[in-house]
Length: 102
Image 1: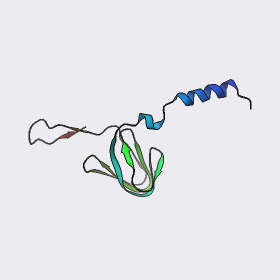
Image 2: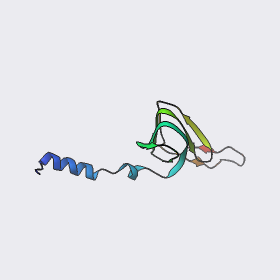
Image 3: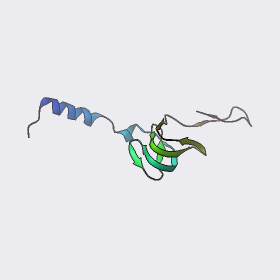
């Protein structure tokens, strides 16, 4: 087997790149219902799956529900994509005031 300079350099570039799992953050939710062609971070999902900060949820055909935090539900339909950059809740400014989501 003969290696060329280009193939060796290209191989080193790919080996030095972080994997998709390395850039994903903490678990912030999960898919609650999945029907059809749904992926999380390019991995096919048939039932439920964890969703992390940085995850990409994509519905090609079908539908899915994304549950973040304590009951925040997002309904995704066919031909949709959602990137979860960050999810959290800020403390309320005053007693009785609603919390602000970030």
